[in-house]
Image (cartoon, rainbow, N blue to C red; front, side, top):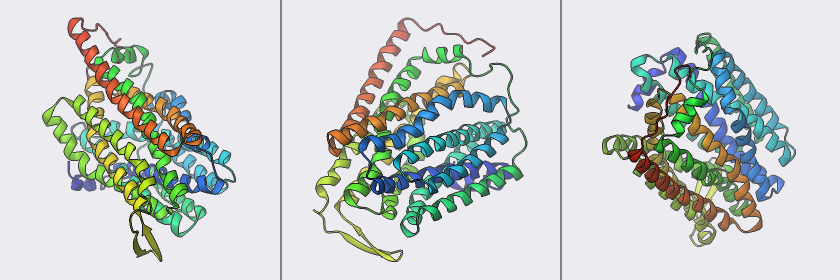
Length: 434
């Protein structure tokens, strides 16, 4: 699927409305990650509190993801989208008023609710209203919009925070969200999901049946551990850049954009390669191990800072100094982008393929999300404590260790479960009512 195919879909008013919600959500998420680094410096936060910036966001999502998904299935999805966008505007207003790190944690929790509503509802509606023979095209294009807006959040959000202030940045994010709200209000059909009755599509028996599959069991176990390491990187790399090296918001955005760019450039090719080669579990392991290497390279920035003569660039009304720390962090994040490109398409495809065995792709993807949220809750605060009481290096090496261990656990669980299945295939069944 080419980029032109995605652009062509924007002519469809309903797709444009849904793409607007993805753009608003992802741009806000990326911009606020940079803002968190600035807040960490402003309030002199500890590693534990910095971890809460990520844990607070994820904890509320872990609690609501399943019941929220069920309510979206049963209710009017258009109203849920409008509510999620409105809540995000409230979040931006709340960030304008923060006066302490406690306020940030509380608002991050509210942001987690809004992000969950938009992510779950948007994905559900796209899958529902897409023509039967264009489902992949619609979902792929929707994800491309989210990826592009995340990159825009790094680059444009970093520029706004560098050039202006928090308030102006949040006003711009609010404006983007209001435009998305109006697009949904004006162009999306009423009740696009149509609602479902009873317990169709998400019952406990379905989840049990999926967890009896060796690949699903291995993937869920893998994501529990891998997410601990990855979420620590997402939260603490921008904070490290700001608090240790004084890198400004604009350049932090460049660092993060580098990883997004390598991810964008390579993911399509590697996804196609995994389809042709098969054995997607190898792609998951290789991508995860490479992510562990990239994470372990982040502390190199502490040793090369000052060892390389800075490059000075006169841009946006100021001189930007790009020293050793910048190049080390940029290089590490680019490696992480490639690693995600190897791992992500294979991981998602495996969850979809296993879900199709019980005609329960949505339930399979729910397990994928929940397993990630558990690690997302524990990871930032745990690694934050290590950063506070041991060292920055130990924090990132611990995150890398979790990722490497996750890779090994995935391989062991999968091979053992697969061997057991060959000898005694699971007899899991799914109740037609689920």
